[in-house]
Image (cartoon, rainbow, N blue to C red; front, side, top):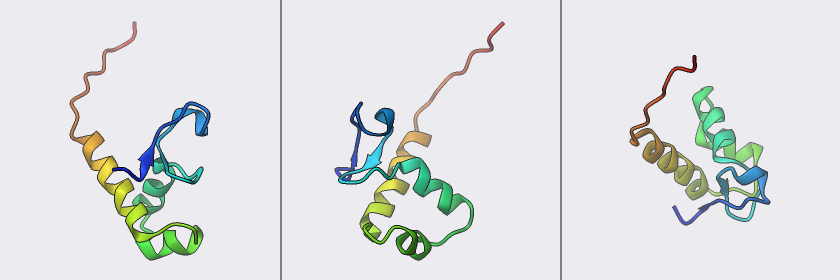
Length: 73
């Protein structure tokens, strides 16, 4: 998780891979669309496999949290 950072001045505070402006969301969207880790690495040559795995781990941890949404009237 140390590869994922938050900073209000980088991508509006979204979680990004440290040293980049590549958001966790972007990486997870590639994977959700069916791309392989190798495809993501080809698209973003500055990334390492560990960066992509950190994004997956981050997404998993966020999905494990319990959120309750309330309907807006």
